[in-house]
Image (cartoon, rainbow, N blue to C red; front, top):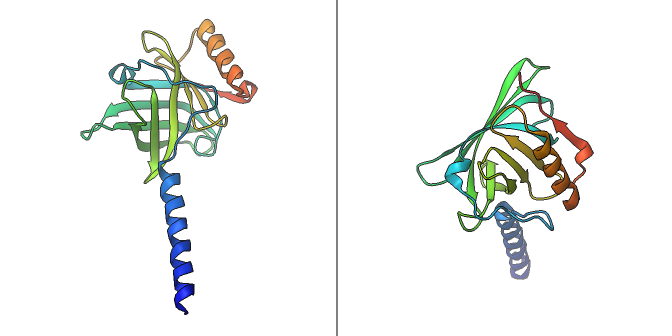
Length: 180
């Protein structure tokens, strides 16, 4: 191989490596959305029930979905998601970790279930008592409505749905959770 060819190969490998590294760390928030500020991490920790979501492959077919957030020793947040697959008659569990994107008093985090790959986890609405939350992903394909209980008051539901619609979410496509 000629010296010039080796240089081009090295440059190409470098560009690919830089792209992969930057995509692993890049997380975003949907245009027009704003993460909750101030955000209280300690009040957010604990168990949440998934009331509704925009469906995607990792949760497709699951019901009774919950998320439990707790602190890891290194200051990151442990994410323990569980859901029931009625077709397979089994529970599915995913363990990941979340880190704040910037300041710890802003509800803007990134979450990973697969090594160095992170996705946006943006708390864009939450009540004062931290009982109900509206969470946006990186873009308009990911949205969750969460509650500390298995149901959510109609007024909160209407408020969160309107907020999501205003951002451009297709709220008609939401999958509404079932909790036995």
